[in-house]
Length: 249
Image 1 (cartoon, helix red, strand yellow):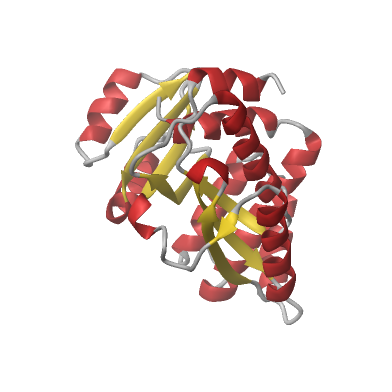
Image 2 (cartoon, rainbow, N blue to C red):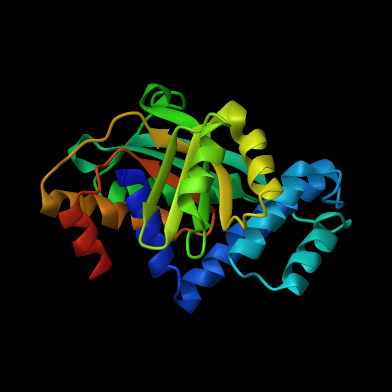
């Protein structure tokens, strides 16, 4: 299983805690807000909102929370979020790409810069890491009860890149331009998707010693815990040894 997907799996396990779940809900509400403000509050005519609602349901967000978020987003007092990204390096030369949604750019810049400084990272210029990551569609599905062999054949026909199972989690990865087609195919097959998103997947990963890797992951988690941060991508190889250490923390 790729390091990218291993870390996603570990995060899901950690995300079972109430505090982490609240953070996940906050991120999804921001996604709903952006989608509803840009394309309207009707998911039938707004694919971006439909996807955000799909992810909200996958995270077990209550229906009332979803409806309130949509109503607030299309109201006169809706919060205006802007998208901001940061690129740089953690210790040991690990590339880090940070995506944010914020209503206060100055606060976000100061906060992200502070985390980079605290953990020995270095911020770079936007665009400097584009060559290290591909933009891919990534779908997360609970594999329990699925006929994985038949599903794999169905999905291969759509042109997916990867079909990986770890424990009870199936991860399907595709090229960015196939995202809509793969999402539609899963819907036609009646497959319930826990999360679907366009993510930055590292083209190559970098392996470093365990203690250095644990320090890098502390840095990654500090970024992910920031209220304005939506996603953090990196090219650190999550070895089995590192995965075990992270799960036991």
